[in-house]
Image (cartoon, rainbow, N blue to C red; front, side, top):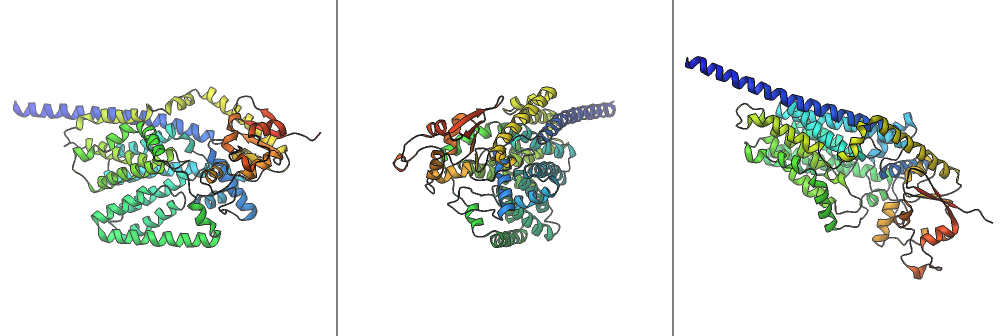
Length: 505
């Protein structure tokens, strides 16, 4: 009978949809297991006394100097530069009451911030889309891609994740703004706090401002005025507390290259191509919702702002963190539409979810992270690295007086002061702010009892080179000076080299 046939057809379609939903859930659960394992492993890595990234020793050294002499920002002609906003230093310093170590305090705060960021990704997506699976997937795309390709920022002493956590809390509050204007004020304040934690995460607050301007002028005015006022209050407060060098340091110039921005854009965005492409599909396939208009604005702004930031020396993959967040939210929008029974692409949802997951797992960073799955071997490598690190620290610790470290975490753990900021010192040389005679004459006179280099060939990366031989009396290059005045010490299992001052005859 016709009625029975229709009923059977509907039952078959329902069973098919339930089967596809189960497959989709299985894909997400398997992805969750893999990403959870990698995340836990990276958190475990943070418990070891090993360098994870260059910035760790830089941040720790600045906090140590701040605690010793109350100086967090430096004059233009100092050998150390602090171009980070101050909030992360105060947050990390407060946790030192428990750890007594700036590096591990920073790692702990970063790990907590990373978990908060993932939770907020879920919370924002679930609040706006109402689809739990899509919300979980948005969080996993962000966490997973960061784990695999940006692992240097996972549980490391760097303010990037702290700023992102604040920024996502600000976004969540901004999406609640149409209910109570208090949320607009609060979100603007949180965004200001985020910027004063790490000032490269500006695409999201700008996107929220444009979004509110389009949909609600009253919310836009309240959000904008609140943001401007809170930012000015923080600027005045920190300038009063930390001195005029606070603003000078914050805007320290860097060597900039548009060709560098283009080259790095192609390098870093290529592995995100699939996720980005899927995240912008809703604008072509579905009716544009208010939330997706925000996400789309965010995708566009984060790409162009991130690409511009890549042109500055020292900027890396962190310039595209906001693009990753925006793309992950866009992917959640796509998946939520595909779970709508009225969508003509409804049956493709499991396949699309699989593509998203593969777009994270099959990326260049996985070549490195796959070693984590052989935990015994991976753990042994970390223990070996920690043993080598302790030997390096011991050599530096035994020296008297100044120590110069290319990677300052060794000097920090050895109890030495933060004497020179290798990267920003180089920027001052390149921009003509400083001459490198201070280091050159110190090297000639063997004024530094110990010098640490990450690699023997890195002598030039520490600016121990003769750029202007007319101002250098004996015209010896750095390697000759090191050979003449220092004894080289190497360490098995690492490229790190230490030059120790020769004892007088």
